[in-house]
Length: 316
Ligand SMILES: [Zn+2]
Image (cartoon, rainbow, N blue to C red; front, side):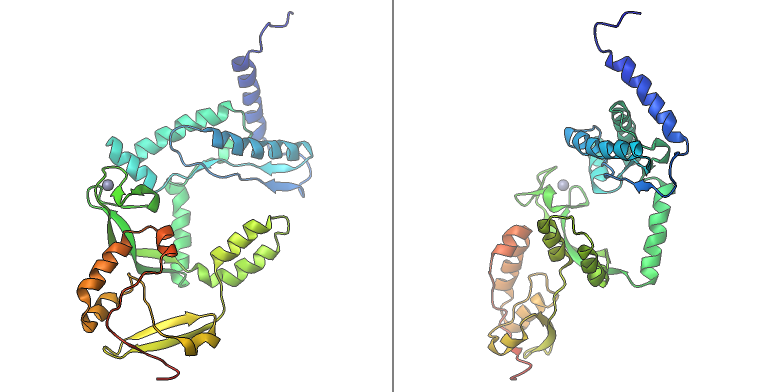
C-alpha cells in the first residue's frame, strides 16, 4: 500500500467523525464517580457558523477530550438558542414562517458543526423553540408565578409602528428602526418580569465560591446584582398629596435635601406638571429624554421643574 500524496481531509475526517459519533452513543466506561458536565453555550441559529463559534467550541472540545482521556464520563451537549426577537425579525424580512427559517438554519449549522468534528452528544440535542423543550420552561414559569417570583409590570419599550414589534436598544439607530428607518416611539407596555432581587443575597454568597474568577468579572457581577443597604422614606407632594418613595444609602445626608427629582417615565411626572402649571415644558422634556439611549441618559443631569413642591418628611 502506498501512502497518498495529499492528506484527504474529506475522506479521513468523515471516517473519524462517524467513529466518534458511534462511540458517543455507547454508555461511557470508566469511573462512575468521575463525571463532568460541559456546556459551552447554545448558539443562536442565525444560519451559518462563524469564526467566533469555531473558537469558542474548539476550546470546549479540547477540554472534553482531555477529560475523557483522563477517564471522565463527559456530558457534552449541543443545542440551539432558537426563540425570540431575531427569529421574528428575520421572518418578517423574508416573509417566511419563523419556524421554517429557524429549523433550516439549525440544519445548516448542524452540518457545519459536525464537519468540525466536535465531540458532542448529538443524541441529546435540543432546540429552545421545540415544544418538547419549552414545555419545561412553561412549567418553571408557572411555578415562579405561584411563588410570586414572576410578576407583571408596565415598562417603556422601543416600538416601531411599521414593524409592529418591540425593538432592542441595539436595533434603534439615530431614533429610527434599523430595518425600515421609521421613527421609533417609546411605548408603555405590560411585560413579565422575574423577581431576581429575591436572590441577591444568595447570588452574592455564590460569588465567594468562585475564587478562580478574575476580580473584574466578580465586580461586574456584584454591580449587576446591585444590592445596596439604606433607608426608604416618603416625601409628600404639597399640591396633590401624592407620595414619592425614595431610597438612599446615605441617610446622614437627608437633612441636606433641596429637591426631589423623578424619572421622565415616572407615573407622576405628567400629573405633577399639570398640577404645577408646567405641562408644556415637562412634556417637551419627557419627549427629548425618552429618545436618548441608556448611555446618554446616565451621563446627563438634566431636569425641568414640575412646579410642585415636596414636603420634607423630617423637617416638614
Ligand atoms: Zn421597524
